[in-house]
Length: 354
Image 1 (cartoon, one colour):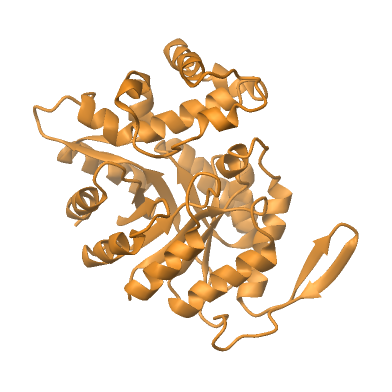
Image 2 (cartoon, rainbow, N blue to C red):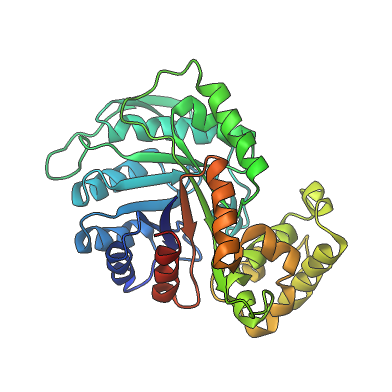
């Protein structure tokens, strides 16, 4: 299985990209969550100039964040800096919208957005709509400004069949956050295959599948739920708890899927952050430091059940067996989001999958 890294945009991010390339990793991704992290297009432009081989990904943008012309311009500009090395993840903006106190966009708008990006980034015209006004648009300059000759890989962020069906119709790959259940991946791939049967396929399209998680390798006598494991995986667990807390009123079915202990952790998180599940400003309390290193006082919220669901923790042999199962489910690349010591965690990943 291939391996890659996901980070947030910050000064010096290009140094991590260089190290990832030196380690032989396949891809280097930057989050697009504007009110929490830095800008991925700026970060990846630095990475593009500092590297020569590694794939560079946006993980992920959304029509609820950027217009199709603006996003296409950014992607094609990156493609001019790193020809043929750009991957664009696109989703409904689940977290990026919720950090604004807003809801994600629809699957239909997502599909239209992807179609427009695919057209524009391949030098084709596309339909652009604002209210009742509809116009055909295309890049009016190419050459040194943007690169529309080398293909850009697109992937759809999916946790369920609706988004996977969009990927099938658009001929794209899939990316999912914390989804380590092989059965769920079989369902996503089946939904993508079902809708792709009668869809004309771009010869340059990719249909690879990526999963984002965290990795913590144990020695034989290490505690799988000790402080080191909690710190390495806690950002994923707290992201799920924040989502559950934020959506408790609008999506009670999600909370009902959690165990009593996990629902209690959601309640404690709300209390600890000084907010409620219905407070209109709860997003300002739940999402600061999103996907960042957790505070030691929050380790009690990193429940073993959620850690084991969202992250890869175990001995080398345990992890290789679990990764093999994911590969059999059709996952092409394992993406790790390191927070404790990214250079060391990248090296561990590269060694594990060498």
